[in-house]
Image 1 (spheres, rainbow, N blue to C red):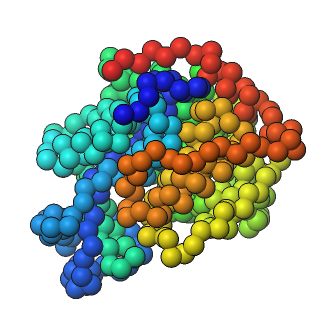
Image 2 (cartoon, helix red, strand yellow):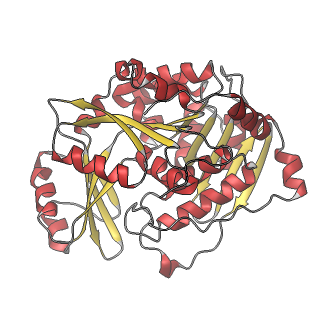
Image 3 (spheres, helix red, strand yellow):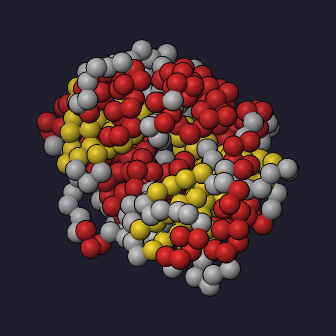
Length: 383
């Protein structure tokens, strides 16, 4: 069991709002991949021809059910890194079916407090994960996950959950169909001692004009922005930065107009190579620790896990360099497991003390100010 309290971490201090999905994962033969016209190392949205795929996977003896969805993955990893019971919460929409019950059990086993609203007419969102050797093919069917309504946030049960959060995290995917929810959370955080964090999530959200127009409305409210190098390039083009250099894009993004009154942090990961962080007019580059390729099972969820490790240690009050290091640890842990299964044992990570130079560079309102506001705030959430 996890301890009841921890330094700098309070009940419900990290809240994720996103698309909850039940991952149905299984090692399969190549013929099943071929049967449904799929390709490996690829993720697609489900079509009519994929209806029976989920049933076939569920009939296999080695099938595994894992709580999934980008935001959910991040919150589950953060909870594991924090090791403080009740410190994380997740809000989303599910159907009224057996899949929803499985999802609830999976989330509970990861010690995340889940607050699902129920869509009566649509099934719970799910993702088929077909594994052949170490490669994966994923087929996502959002269904009820895409039906979340802002009104749920205003209910008597959920309003205190939002009020308790010191950090609110959403994936960029949420602008697709639920922009009103994203804007409500962004504006609410801007008026409080709460950090609004967002992930770029996918290049199409910035390259397709309809989605890009929606995304631009949110940018000025983002306190911490995450993304990988491909997404960063798409973001730079969307914003008209006229550069292909990740450091320059990160710096420009950190200087974008903010309506929150808080210094913006921008974090772009570049896979196994390095991580770029920009804040307060400066750019910092961190090399990713080397990892034996033989230990990699699959890279699914690596980016989500990085964010989970980063935010967990930001909540603990660590310097940003330590937050990045914790993100690397979490990411490299997840890619050594099948899917995004959370390890049973507590993390072995020990925060590295930042060098004096790093402390001088990063000792700004971003770190110390955030911890101060965390200590000022009172937790009001009830379970």
